[in-house]
Image 1 (tube, rainbow, N blue to C red):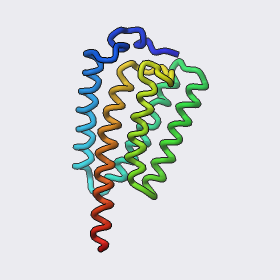
Image 2: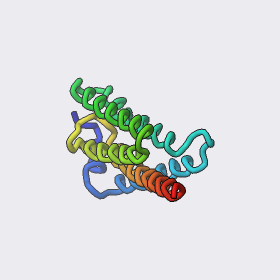
Image 3: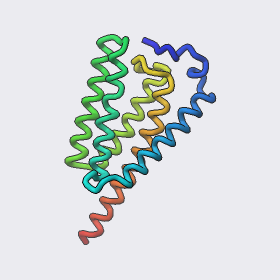
Length: 158
């Protein structure tokens, strides 16, 4: 099922003013998320913040799928959301880097929705690119944070 935006030339051409707007606002949103993650309450660790983001973004497409989509699309979106949810639990309990990789994996999932490229969930045309930019930037940010924490911990043990 295609989105109402799929036929709008502003959303179908690869490089246009709309895609630049989505990218710019995605970057701004990603930076705000990073800023919030740096100046959060002490009880909200980077790890918990990343896990919360991963769980939240996992279910966004489930919400989209509930509007005018086939049952198979709803099942697909629920299945992927559960996969990311499980990844968030494992990442939180075993390996922080999995949280960052999960956020970036969601970015790849976003691209599969762009102009109904592979996944045909009815989503607003601007959403996949906007969300992709946020997921990739924030995923890389958390990966750098977690890798540097791991290096610091291993250095402190010596």
